[in-house]
Length: 478
Image (cartoon, one colour):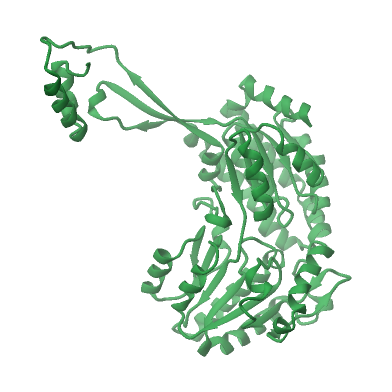
């Protein structure tokens, strides 16, 4: 392990990864990797999580293809120095902001989207010119094996490496010196990563999660309500059966429309996924027995079980939990205090939908807030009175797919951001560069009084154009 990191550091010191040509070649090779191994990726994702090819392409393969293509089309623009505006006080001079790679990067990825959450940050690290060590999750073993076997065949093995193993390997990696750590996972492990990074003052990006709420306001027509119901179902159970940091965790709705919404959700679930737990279609399974038992324990609470209005069945042999809707479970129950990360959807009823703002603010900052509303005033209140990594109105999950919007959390949902240019920035340092001329170099013609100089200096800093006067009369030196 130490030898691999030393090789990555030597490669970075050689300057090879700073070349734009090298970066583009690696991105093209990564695109080839995904395109030429699509079926192998589908197979690995089915083995690990029961994902069907449509879900695997939508949430994994297609995401990487889109992200690589976007980065390739923008890379020349991203790496170019940007003009920095300078005050007239420094005339004649030129300022620039020059992006440079951070160095040797460690990327930890999660098991729920084992291809996307490994390769998407890698795109940003390569684009910025870093060397990288990838540590995918061991909880998706087929995907891990695919990455370990395939990446060395396509990418520069002296600059990009993959390592397997469990928590013990992660602990050993965190004892080493890195120039950047990018982590996707739980807040508990995120704290360990931050603690280890503090030893070397290593910058860290943490992509965590939390309880992402959805707000359902009364809409102006039944057709819009049906669309909202479809998007809620898709955002809760579509990606990895709710095992996603940006999946809807719970739903807030006025009590007067709750029954209508629940009926629409039931119909949509049956249409999308079927009714028989033994024959559910187009839905992933729970990753392992431990996670299934954790979710099952939520439902074993008698008060929580009494709130189930749809679903609730568990197939332990196939690691499947039926899409489940709960109406007003106790707010102090575990299902309402812990991130669910599975196919259970609590619905909390309110007398007035605007109470949802106070409800959300009573909990830690979520990664994203979803709000289905046509009320522009309510939208403004959500934006101004809540804090979250993102807000999406009238849809769910789609913000993750945009390369032009930053993706990241705030507070306990994480910090740092990536996707598109934001990925490039995350793995870059913006270096300030200033070019001065040797002339003019004017000296005072007479020894000015200190209080006179001080007054002019104050004016110069207050009104930038006075810098020219200072240069002309030679008061720039003490």
